[in-house]
Length: 334
Image (cartoon, rainbow, N blue to C red; front, top):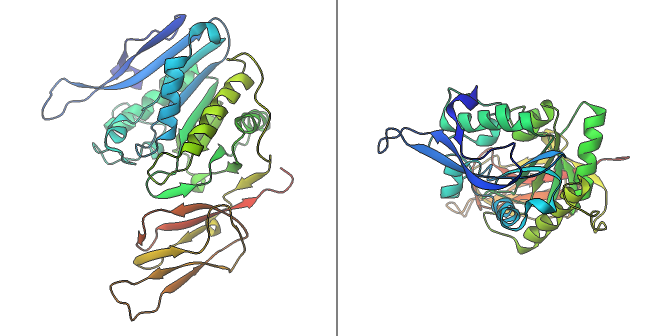
């Protein structure tokens, strides 16, 4: 088990507020018996649900770590009922360099679940989350943004779930967050993501995508701050009821391969539409310019389905296979 190699100076079962570290053994060239110290906070007050809050899954996504840092500083035990476990920089090596993947082993933390106690540093961290924290938790909230390569409509994310009761409880959490969009995202059906693993473990699960583009969006920070207080009230950890909804309750989904407009050549991508624009199948989405060969005509890309522009690539340079635009389609009757 991953727990055998991890050590922490917090007591998960003690009432009060504790901030400390989870130590991951990390034997590198300059430190034979060193550790990687992941920041953690546990706030507990009596009986109630256990909610695990996570950010820094990818190191170039910033709104989540900002908001979880605020909660660590501001929440005191007397304000809550239950237990909060907060890890605001779970993929610390990537957070420290502002990168999507770990600079130590090159792995994407969000494609390593359920982890491996004898694996690389990233696999060991995901193993700790899966084997230790998921076992304690009733609810899992993973705060993401679009990262350096995508800018997304700020949204609350629902992981597909075959259990109707669990799906309904997760959907209620997504609604309570009250983001501008509610989006079902399956990540091509990949089971190695944190939210997919949490759902498989039976946890009520909420994800987010807050802006992106490798920057901090003031509007997305406000949405995330309000949304986190709303869900903690919805779950009964904070007193009171969620604030009245500001956004439509319509649900969207990334509905398969045709939702992605991908580059099929190397060049510079020019998008034709802003985020939130309604688009239709076959409509021109943008074009690839060949700036090193200006005599060559730009190559047009088209949308593969109806919906709204949910995500846009941020770096102008593209290569074959890069995701340029993401379309979210409305789920009728949801």
